[in-house]
Amino acid sequence: MELEVYNISGQKTSKKVKLDEGVFGIEPNDHAIYLDVKQHMANKRQGTHKSKERGEVAGSTRKIKRQKGTGTARFGDIKNPVFRGGGRIFGPQPRDYGFKLNKKLKRLARLSALAYKVKENNMIVLEDFTFDAPKTKSFVEMINSFELQGKKVLLIMDKSDKNVYLSSRNLQKTKVISANAINTYDILNANNILIAESSIKEIEKLHSVN
Image 1 (cartoon, rainbow, N blue to C red):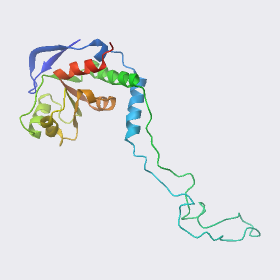
Image 2 (cartoon, rainbow, N blue to C red; image 1 turned 180 degrees about the vertical axis):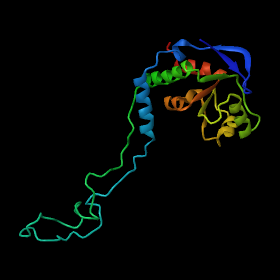
Image 3 (tube, helix red, strand yellow; image 1 turned 45 degrees about the vertical axis):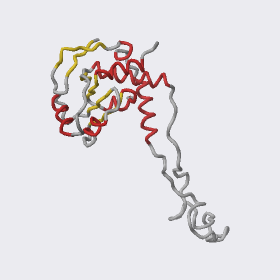
Image 4 (tube, rainbow, N blue to C red; image 1 turned 30 degrees about the vertical axis):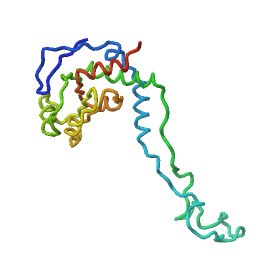
């Protein structure tokens, strides 16, 4: 499987890059993708929700009426959950929503997400580049050259590039990550992926099965 290599002006170069079928051409596993995205979203939850139970509500502990002879149900103090201002029954408590997945499954999910982007022709290979200075206009011009304005774009670089990152930081629908930090959610959340040529080798090195 080969893809054309473009420059940041949106023009084809004379180069082509060959993708490893074992990394970018696998049969996608939808269940692995589901589990990995579910874990990603769960780990982002703060889990700091909290309500007060009857033992935590401020109020008198005086028994509000006698136990027997009223013809109605018995009641204790004003903090009883059936009263307005009382404690909440089985309310939410702080908790951690995260759960674990094994590394092989997460690897399968990432490769499945990449395979979908390749199959759908939503991955564009760029020759390696950098910006001389942080400038959002330069990044916007690159996005516009591929007619991706208004779309969610993920740019994968071989390593962290400060100028490129700062140039994209003000754009809501773009994200820049390094090849060793890709995750299933970011790949699927993007409409199109721009990937630097050297990033492909880095991804293949990290995800190939020896």
